[in-house]
Length: 467
Image (cartoon, rainbow, N blue to C red; front, top):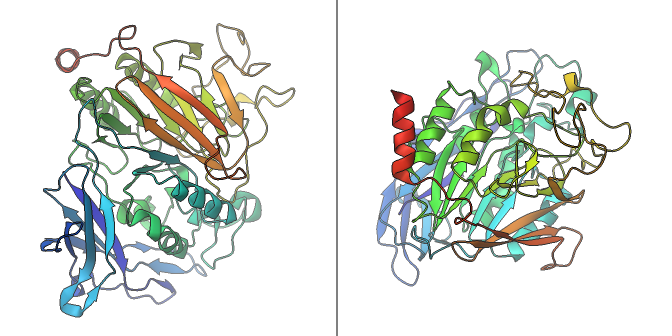
């Protein structure tokens, strides 16, 4: 079992004349051992510095502190470890922190509680969400995109709830990169002890000089891309006990002819549901959301990938992007289907862009189809429905059948997988007392009615397509 630690040392710089720190001046070392024993093991990693540069007069450039990535190997499953990191030759070691490894892959072992949250940012609502999440003592955190939301600020630190409304004439979409440092420091007490797995959202795009994008995201987090056969930080997979997680990129090509789709085919074909019965997918922009904000924005991704996820029997999909909470019934191609996934949107983590409140099915609120495609990915795939209660229309005229529960409140969710077939999902609202539930349901797998593809079958399908 492996665990990757990442830490930032040294101070960032922002301004006109910045000089990047030399990452070679500080070693990347973690000393660790099982809890209650000496920290006699030592792992050495690598370090990096990234910059956010703007080729426009008056905009401030940024260079980060030294970001250290260290991989710990040979760890025992479901075991409490203690560690400290830094450079012992400089007498620069951190305090002692603790973490518990994931259970071994197998149908009988699961993390006790998995927190799922999206669109966090760093606001008063964020602190409420994180306090509630911490009180639920998660073993693993899934962050489904939109992390620091540093791109809601100009390089001078001036922020707005709506960037394009307040700053329509900036020559490039600016960011205030120190928000990443503030976010990391705020989150440290939690994520120094609880593993966090992140997938990119639109707020991580962060354009800069030479058309570079996603630099902060790719530099600050660790991704098991190589271990899962991915060539990108934008999509990867991993196991946590008897769950196989697939983290997909909504802001990189998802076409059937592209690398991500081909990787997804290979990954799904390799999943052994006897070992990891649960198959859970996450990406940022939801396919099934009934809010007016971002309505059917990711339709092109759904058109390309939904059949593949359905064929391999994905159980649950987690998304963010829409700043509200919504849970679907099992659905496939906008139709209730007992073998389709349950889609859950948790884009209500707290960022400053306000809640999504209006539904597309309310009178007069259905968006004009031409306004719906994602600005960054482009493409147009959202047409009027050709069957069902909304036939001939772009929106339903009531809450769609596939939408089971929706509410505009900040919060987070906790998934407790109990066994091979039952998982308890609880959504916690920030305004509620700690421990109370805003939405609570058992999600039940029925492999006898929806038999998943076995690895050898998946391999045959994949090999046949390869030929």
